[in-house]
Amino acid sequence: GNITNETNVMTSKSKFDEKIEPSSAKMYFHYYGQLLHQQNMLQDYVRTGTYYAAVMENRTDFFGRVVVDVGAGSGILSLFAAQAGAKHVYAIEASEMAEYARKLIAGNPLLGQRITVIKGRVEDVVLPEKADILISEPMGTLLVNERMLESYVIARDRFLTPNGKMFPTSGRIHMAPFSDEYLFVEIASKGLFWQQQNYYGVDLTPLHGTAFQGYFSQPVVDAFDPRLLISPPMFHAMDFTKIKVSLV
Image (cartoon, rainbow, N blue to C red; front, side, top):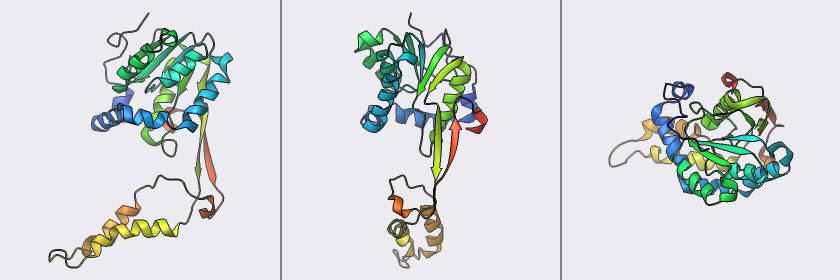
């Protein structure tokens, strides 16, 4: 039967509360609780199509199995798992997106009858049974940003059977130095404002150095031409099935 949030979410202070400031968590869940952001992710067809292919090409892993969708968002991965023949899917989502996921899943009744949406945090939710498979999209910028991987590993330790499988199983952080003169000039030009010596009679130049450092301390998330690399890349691999939470 369906699981009610009230009886299956622990109310005592959890590991999530210990690692995340309340104000930061509130902003995070508000961001992911918007349909606009979920649409952006769904329209990333490389991302969504890759997950769909991974599930459908491994139907034998999903067929007749219990699946937990960690950070389910719109519930799309839960629906994929149901399409692959999962016995039951528990879609765990902490943001207000859980209500939208319920609507989407209810609108697909042939699949939705095997999906239970639970509004709560992975660190707090209590499930009635262990999972054979975990599925999630826990990767942030540079893999670890947003700390979703920690929740994914916690879900592994709390919900997954000893021989259970994880989708995805591993990830890699690739790093390499690059040089981009045009990007440098673009960022540096933002600091020209602070080179004004007569801004309504005020000399702003004393703050130019601080502003210059501030602009270059911000990450730039973009795609770059590989020809800009000035050395071969290195990478750090993570095996999600084995790594400890403290190392994520």
